[in-house]
Length: 220
Image (tube, rainbow, N blue to C red; front, side):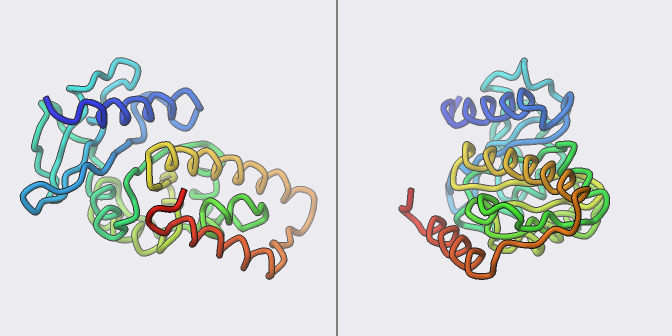
């Protein structure tokens, strides 16, 4: 069996996702870019409908850019098209985490983006967290809409569905999902206190510049 360390990273992230309350049961999915072999992009991804606490490295499925299984006996996540589309569109992305966290999912259900009311969101996500138009789960339509909506940012809300966070590592992608959930909670609570002003334009510009700088290859 190949890619044992990488598969263990996927398991660790999936279990951390559950432990943080970002999903319930077997919901959500996690993947990691493995690189290319014979000209094909390879990705390690969680299997579908498999309890995360009991996952072992051989349960993590390796698929190619067409979604075909390269190694593994279990069917890959039904959201494989979403993960693959993000890797194709974003060479900077090496980890993808898809969650159903409650506050962010509430924003996704309402079709309301999470505005940049916290500067840490701009530093880590690149600005407001946009909402992608509805696409049926597991379809290329959902994948295409998510890619278009996320642009160069690190997170997107999937209408009536959940959240996707991306990063240069799986640790970074998970952090993005945790931050988006916290930002959504703050946003929903703060709305009850009155109108919500955005960050000052100069602060937005500076924080956005930091985000873009961090996305450059070789940056910590």
